[in-house]
Image (cartoon, rainbow, N blue to C red; front, top):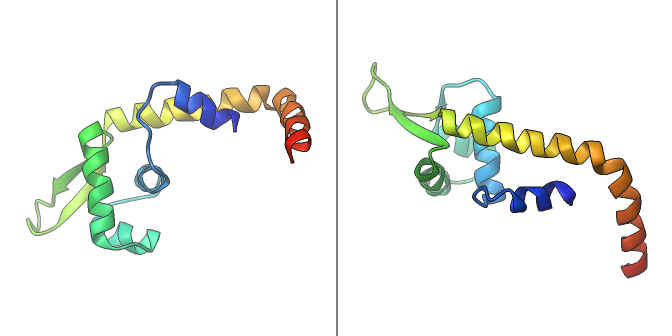
Amino acid sequence: MQTLIGYVRSGQPDLTNRQMALLMLVYLTPGPHTVRGLAHILGVSKPVITRALNTLGTLGYLRRVRDEADRRNVFVAKTGIGQEFLERFERNIEQQEGSGRRGAAKERGILLQHG
């Protein structure tokens, strides 16, 4: 919970779970990545991936690159801005894990009171 609160407070754009999964998939798995391949891995349609890519592309986190060998193919590529976003997200998780031991006990108490 604290990680998500920290993410919201960071002022970074709010990404949907689908957008975040797509972003992490491209950055954390070997490419090249195509819309068809990403749709298959995530179990969604190509238009769903296209919509998520439109948003992530507008933010500068991913970009489309035409295959020079076969101009019909389009690959999904990483960007420096996307790499920075994920690095900040990772730091946020690490910071929350460091303070998480104290916060977890407090959260359990709150949940028990409200549960």
